[in-house]
Amino acid sequence: MRLILFDLLDEHRYHFYPLALSRPIWELRCGITSLGEKLIAAAGTKDVACFVPPYMAEHYRNQVDYPVNDPSRLSGDDLLLAHPRLKADELKALGETSQVVCDAEGRLLAVRVSQADLAKLDAGSIDSFLASAQAQLPKADLKPATWDYTWNLILENPAQLTRDFQAMGRSGVEGTIEEPKSLRGGKDDIYVAPGACVHPMVVLDASGGPIYIDEEAEVFPFTRIEGPCYLGRKSMLLGANCREGNSIGPMCRVGGEVEESIIQCYSNKYHDGFLGHAYVGQWVNLGAFTTNSDLKNDYSSVSIILDGKRPIDTGSTKVGSLIGDHTKTSIGTLFNTGAYVGAMALIAGTGKPLPKFLPSFAWYLEGAVTKGFGHQRLYGTAKAAMSRRKCQWTEAEEALWEAVFEMTKPQRDPIIKKGRRMLANQHT
Image 1 (tube, rainbow, N blue to C red):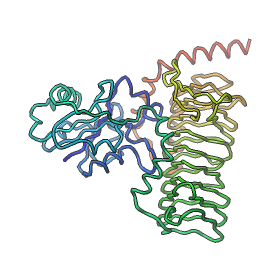
Image 2 (cartoon, rainbow, N blue to C red):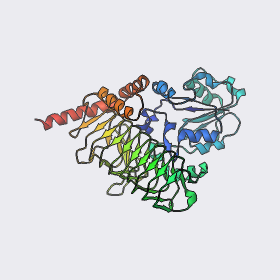
Image 3 (cartoon, one colour):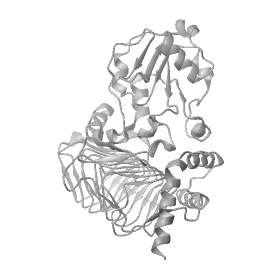
C-alpha cells in the first residue's frame, strides 16, 4: 500500500497560517513528531508520496526523499490518501475497501482505494483524482477527529508529548548527565539520547510527564526542565525555565521562560523573556525580553485574527502567539494575547503591547506597519541567518517566498496605508 499525503490550496488552509505559508500542514509538530510522521507511522508503510500547493513544490522537493506532486504515484498499488487535518489514530478505523472520509462540512480528509478500483478514478491530477473519488466511492460512516487550527496543536501538545514518548518506548541515559544532578520522577520517564549532554546543576523534573532529550542536544547549567517536554536534536537550553508541555527544535537555542509552546527548528529565543502557549516557526529570532501574553486580564476566551479582519474565538483562555518563519524581534518586544505575527516580519518593540495582527513582510517601526526597506532586504537577512548555521538560501526558496509575498498583499497593504497616515500625522 502507498500512502499519499495531500495538502492543497483551499479556502480553509489559512487556519494554519502563518506557519503553513511556507510548508505543508503535515510538517507542523505536535508532541515529539510532526503530523506527517504520525500519519506515516499509523499507515505502516514506507511507500510515501505527497501533493503540496504548487508554489512550494520545488522547494519542498529539495527537503524530502519521497515524490512531490507526481501524478504517476496515483496508480499501480492500493492507495491511502490522507489530509494532515485528519488525526493519525483515525486511520485505524479505515478498512480495506475503497471509501472516502469527509468532515462534517463535506471536506475530504482521507481516501482508501483498492488497486482494482483505481480505473474508476481520474488520475490526471490530484484535484481530478480527489474529485472523482468523492463522486464515485462510498462515504465512510465516520465522524473523524481533526486538527482545525494551529492552536489545537498547542493546546494538545502536553498530552501528545506523553503519548509519543510512550509510543517510542525509549528511556534511560545513553548520553551524559554530569554531576551534580537533580532528577525527579520515575527513571523510565527520562530519555537522554546518544551524544546529548546535560551539564551540572540542571533539574530534570519528570514527575508531571516524560522528558525526551534528543541526540547531541545540550542543556546548560541552571536550567530546569519540567515534563512532558521534548528537546530536539542539537538544540540548546541556556539557563532556561522550561515549563511543562514544550516541543523545541531541532537546532534551536532557548533561554528565559517557555511554557506549553512549540518551536519548529533553527529558531532562537536566547535571552530572558516569556513565551507561553505559542507556536514559533523556523529561523525566528526573538530578541532579549521579547514576551507574549497568553492569558487575558479578565480570564475570558482568547481570539486570534488569522485573515487581518475577523477574530476567531479559540475557545481557550490560554493562547499566546503564532509567529511565522524568518521573523525577527527587537529587545523588549511585547506581544498581545493571541497575537498573529506573520512570516518574514521585522518587529521593533515600542514598550507597549503590539497589535494583535501583524502581516507577513511587515516592518513594524515607530509603532506602525511599514514597507521599511522592502522585502528583498528581508531576504538578505534570511540568507545571513541561514549561513550562520551553514544552510543555504536557494532560488527555489526565494521563489516560494515571492509567492507568499504576493499572497499576503491583501492583508498587508491596507495596514501599511494606515501606518503611513499615522506616521505622517505624528511628524506634522
